[in-house]
Image (cartoon, rainbow, N blue to C red; front, side):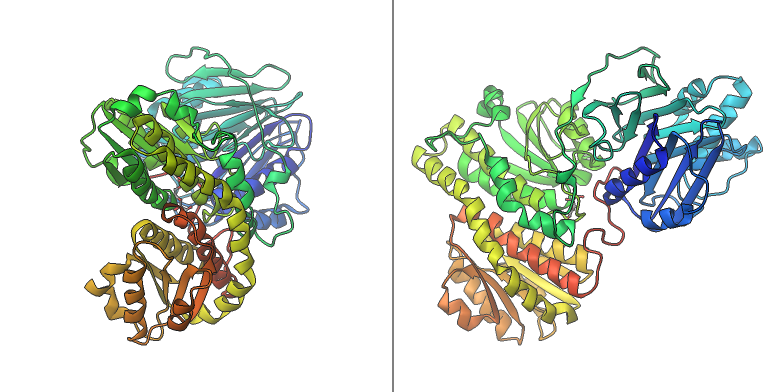
Length: 615
Ligand code: F6R
């Protein structure tokens, strides 16, 4: 949650910072702000409720020169979204400005102590406590800003990524982190900091991922200095090369990032599969699995932890791994796992799935699993994020940056990697026949082309979606491999169109939700010609006989379903274990167009953020 950007260099900072904020807006967009310091040490702070464009309008015509600055886009945790609660927060004496991503858990105690010392607060945020604490330490100890920041962070409990500047000191930018991400971009005479690499792309490809409990001192015309917050030591700098281009961050002719990302899926899945199936199609090569052969051979059990859409992918992964690896698999919400006293041993493999690689609950679940001796395997999209760094091994899904807040291509990438993982581990364990591996791997390689055909449903879905904007509730039903597909379809619709939608295993309908069915509650039923097809046909009939409208996702040429359902979205037939990838694409388009016709902001739905770095 929240995005931070900082710059110290030779160019006008304001343009770099606001461009960076636009790229980080997916992390939160209820308010934003910027602090700019000019070369004479004069500092200007501007804040505005709403999106970054509001901030730009507010700054227009006002002084914003300077080659040093920090900026923030917010997803509110403490205090409503308004101008006052927006960051940067400034100390009582107006000297220090700070932006923060994370939560300060002991802010109430610190607030009380500082108020006792006469400190005045203007906002309702936890962040303001930190800037006031820094000022208080700076004044009482008569120390440098760096010493005050380090001392203050020592008193803070919680998660933070911060950037700090001070008036009359245009040559210093300080950044620090614990649990929340922070990347430093090292350019020629200029340094950038940001919550992820996107604001840095196009300026430099040299980056350092600041470690937990580390502070960076960025001084004009001096090399970057990184200090441990714990003991003041200097950890070595691991300078990495960024492999992201500006083109990858842009909309490429589509109206929204979400639509672009839905349409990218044939390409992103090809990238995800690249080099992972041998040329003869007989073997799956996932180095994360093969390099840890003994772990996969001796595992007692697999536990998958994740949140939201990634949790839905995990449910599909459970079926895949159980079917191909003959191993029991449990799926847990990371937020429940972390506080649930889970029974984990060193013979367990814990798989953590996360698009962003920064989800706080998933990170905490990983730490807990590691502390119990489990081998932790990450499935992640963002290269270099906290989760891939915290796990013992893993696989990147390689689907490129996902900017739309609702996850689409990351979901299909996660399911693809889980299929590869199940095949690779199953082959290693001897629990899947060569014939099956070759058949499934072969069909996986055809999935990108199959998705191209599925995307031709675009016009039909767009037309149909207009009709359903009236609905206040939707039911999504699926069975077996496609029960999680139904959950994911329902989540997509509710998060971007604000229509309430429930996903259910189709057979459960008769145990309660059937009471809801009437002409105003459409049901989306995932009914491919698989082993459970006959069962699902009776669910379609049950809905129809109660006056409900049915949108069926079924296979091409299914005449019977055309007669039964009100609308049929026909997808090519694929092996049962691969249907979730293919069936989820029309569901993404359905959610997209219903939201579009309702006039919703599809890329940045209300109350949501792309990267959930708070509990
Ligand atoms: C829904 C969505 C969220 C995320 C969830 C976990 O479209 O995107 O439900 O899936 O917040 O995020 P990651 O995968 O980044 O851990």
